[in-house]
Image (cartoon, rainbow, N blue to C red):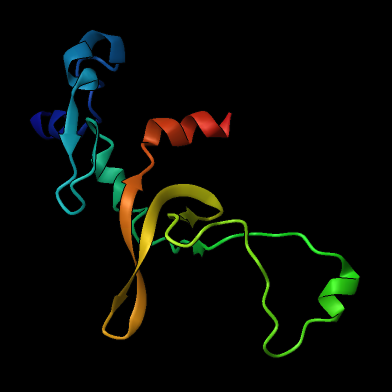
Length: 128
């Protein structure tokens, strides 16, 4: 019987009523492998999500052009973008803004130094 309570989800060990254990459900814990803080009891399920691949996009800029202008493009053509040199770039995960950053060069390859990470609260607000 003692083992059953030890493995019960947080808040349900006291007779199955989450309201009966408000201190356990209101607390936050830090997930050991990621350092992500979240509600108590959620960290165990986080491991299931860590191996899901995400499409990461670094967006330099967007523009619109007429089909006629697109057909005139050739090698050496320049497409102007609205961003100015030195502006921060947007980092998207599955087409959702998660951060902004600056271009850097690391071992002769481009990289992004994060300058702003969008908070989870802001990301959730943009969903609705």
